[in-house]
Amino acid sequence: MSVEFLGRFLPVFYNTAAQPDAWQHALDQICEEMQVGSAVVQMLGREGDHLVPHWNARDSISTARSSAHDSLVNNQDNPRLIIQDPNAEIPDSGVYRDEESLAPSALRSLRERLQAIGLGRAITLGLRYDEDRSLCLILHRRCDDGRDFNAEQVQLLQLLTPHLKQTVSMSEQLGNTQRSVDHLSQCVDQLGTGVMLLDDKGHMRWGNAMARRMLERSSNISVINGRIRCQSTENQQKLTDLLSRASAFDRAGQQAVTVLGQPWDDPLHLLLRRLPGSPAAGGTLALYLSDSVSQTPIAADDLMHLFSLTPAEAHLAAALCQGKSINDYAEDKGVSTGTVRIHLKNLFAKLGTNRQPDLVRLLSASVVAKMHPTPL
Image 1 (tube, rainbow, N blue to C red):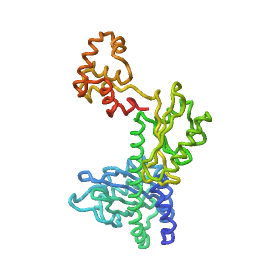
Image 2 (image 1 turned 120 degrees about the vertical axis):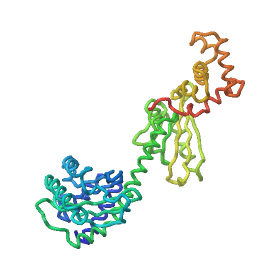
Image 3 (image 1 turned 60 degrees about the vertical axis):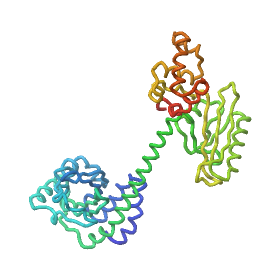
Image 4 (image 1 turned 90 degrees about the vertical axis):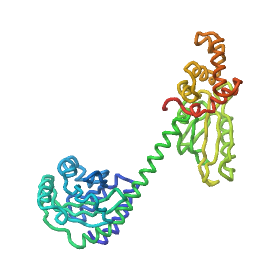
């Protein structure tokens, strides 16, 4: 490895933070330059008197032989992973050889197993990653190459130390961010309201499951070449006007509304709002969609647990939220209206109201009314 190589290599190395699949290519370059048979990066955590691999990246040959590597070397029998002094702190960084840290019998046993998978002498760049974890880059010569690693190679491994830590830290942060985005997306998919992210021209950047469902079945709006469009001239003009009004917003939180379609033909209600932190020009808009078809029943079981209702009271409450009358509900259930009115009286008492419209308002404002009852 040379200083010139390090200058060429670092952009490739840092690219692995955003593209985890690029680790293999980066480690292949290290193998070629260092003339080694294996290059592996590992994150290790302490568990009792052992270090346990939490994550690793391998060069292409080691990846192809990973089963053999894991069976013979990358396991709890590896003497490198045994903590000799549990009270010892993890060093900030260092370059280590097996001969310097392992007992002769342990070294002999390890080399026999390494030879079985075609590997020989090793050198390890190790560093403290955080309080409980360490990070290492392990290089192995091929078993037929008895050369030691020279001073220049050791020095350049030391120069690589901060870059290794920074690259893995960036990769971990990006991974955590992506997982948070994925979880947030899954949460928004459970909403009973369609949510879309648009640019000022109406290009769709993202949509939750309910929004995608509405687009699939709506005769009023669709996405064509990534842009929301309407079939009728009248609706298209309404959509164009809505986007034009949004382009004039000079601060976050301003909103505009419109409705597409006729009242008797499943109209689609739209609310467009500029997101906080989004510039007035070229920023991101949140479009919320609602229609009558997507209004799903509130789960009676959820109402029962949320408001401490009996099963009968909860089913009546769910039916009232769907617009059913007392008489209709009694007929559906095959009970008298008097029985239903007793349940209604109990609902009034438990929710602190004595008017049916107020009861429905309170129930419809609950968290369970905002969620789709099953994953979309």
